[in-house]
Length: 347
View 1 (cartoon, rainbow, N blue to C red):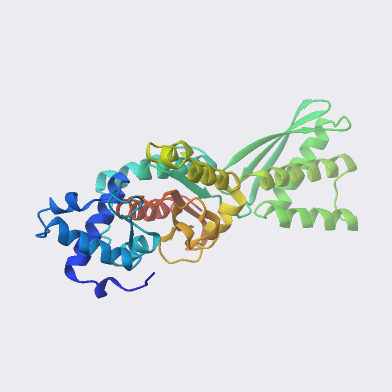
View 2 (view 1 turned 180 degrees about the horizontal axis):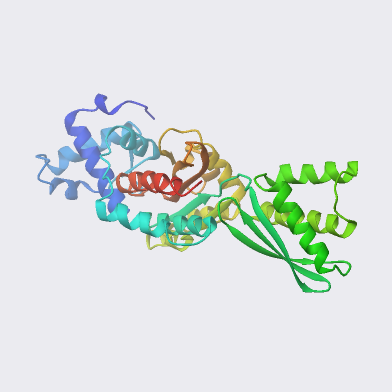
């Protein structure tokens, strides 16, 4: 195989190579010499075209899946095309407006992340992925409301405006005064702090006896923070939508590859690890097939871009995953714009 740059190909070889790759990315099928001969930009006979195709195959840029099936790009060829020949198609004004509208619908940030994953799936015709921001929310207010003698509702409000309700099962009956005392304590003492900071303060004050809370209220405060902590830990690290898009007609010819890909997607921690590789990238990254060991067997491509909060800090990664015949020229700029749009929503 070769890592030769595009500039080392002759003009004729470069044009034929471009047509083969673009044809393959359009319909997922190998491109034959007769089809190429019908292109007005090539003034060559089928025999001459076959000679050029053979040369490109010898360079490791094209492959023939069957003897008479035409040529398709190898992973090396796709990398050469993406890095040196691809002309991206920037999103239109209507597409940008549609993306922003989908992402700014009212609701908690998790809803926006799910909408982003679905949007990426729609854009690419593959599966969309969004890595959930790994950051600790800060408390604004926590209210405890009695539901019954042994149950209370914890209403947690974060500084970002997100509201979460959790039911606490109480081991002993707690009077309304203790509920109010615990609510006031958290709001007054712990507002503006992260969960880790709040829990540390609680432990220190309880251990030193400095807290004015009675025992029942102490337990309520600790239970409330524990419920929030458990919920945060159980949130998915990765939201994947559109797996069904991977089961298209072309996939029926290669069910083992698709099955391998779907198995990989089930292991979200491993996929999140792959996306971490794109976390520090300045621009959208493209992983093609065996370039990443996780998807070496499934022969899939990943287009990933980090998204940043309003301070410019990377808080997550989003992208799409699908067969190597993804429409890179269209999907790459759409992923990039979606990442920038999502970043505007992250406080």
